[in-house]
Length: 162
Image (cartoon, rainbow, N blue to C red; front, side):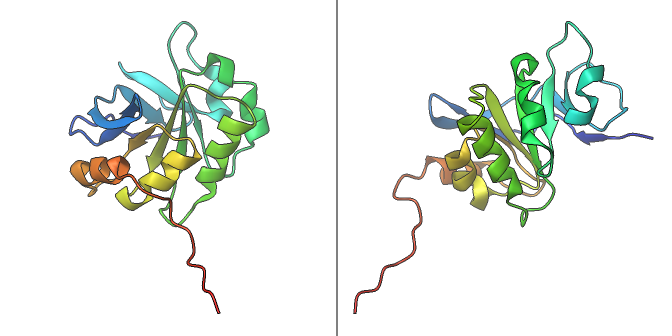
């Protein structure tokens, strides 16, 4: 039986950038496995299920890191948000998906990181175009806010001089 992959978080684990500033936000979206029925909240449907979305209802588009970004480009006009799932914190392919959606396809709507999203990754995710983050279980929202609010130069390798 298909299962729901992401439940909306009432515990403040959704971080959203509002006017560039990170804040805790309510999450009224649910990431649904293909074939699962949408509940009372707004569904985020996988690219493969997009054609079956309920008409007249705001729906989000969900992408896996190995999904075809070119195929998703045709769906962007009707998507209320795009969620890119990180199956593992070690899998950085979702960063490329975000970058391509923003830079190559001009996606200007909400771009959400979901899945195994850790506080230590948020600044890099932000630089790639994400503006909302559904934190993985065990992540402390206050640490996420602090990580995103931190200013300073992005990490770059040290240059050594002879």
